[in-house]
Length: 306
Image (cartoon, rainbow, N blue to C red; front, top):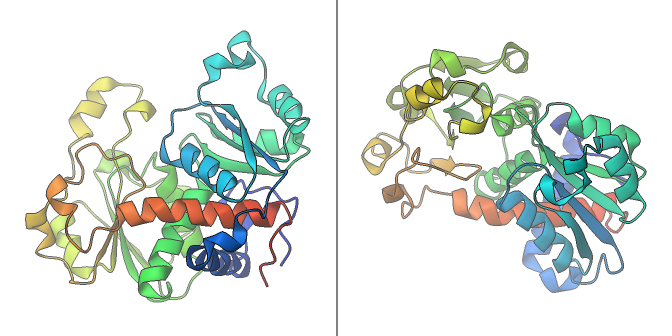
């Protein structure tokens, strides 16, 4: 399986076999990181972040540095020529002249695809509006695989903002290709998953009560209600505390439940959950660096996924 020179814009850009190859490479990196310390020496990653980011941006930068490469870029658009009105197409053409690979986050759906069409280097989507976030999906899947051993037959609950949550959209698309996966969608009516995302699932149910869903779940994927996606602040204030997971509610869950969250959290997971062995969101965060190391190496032609 050769990913050299490819773009990653949506989760379905990778086959199941290619994803499994990346998971395998990630596990090798976790076990023996010193063997990969100079794998991408001489290579340059450009990080183009038009929206705020902590984990995604820093994990990409850490991933490239741990592979022996270097990083350039911007973490907010006002520090670039975007503030002067430069288009995405012109920005990526410029960056492609300097770097070997680029990762971009942008608030508009479809922006990553536009960039990829104009880019002469591999382009990675780090989130385009409420659309997709494929490397977060790889992070989520790696975390589940490391704990559960695989995905066939699991029941996963998606809770919170399922309308604008790009991490949820990406994960549903990717998990839908495995056998026997059941989805339980937990959200208020106003934040239901879009129809085109519901069409990706063959076995799902929608509920309004998290407590009703908890005993059935193998994995619970919590999300925050995203203030930046709302046009009306009153709607955000009304919906932002719709679901809060705490230690008391977790008593209804299975002993081997995995609680995941793409982070940042606001108050949808209480801090009394953090010490529960079923809380995996900080392990999940660290796994994001390893899967991005594997992805960068593969797209740059420095690693074989066979």
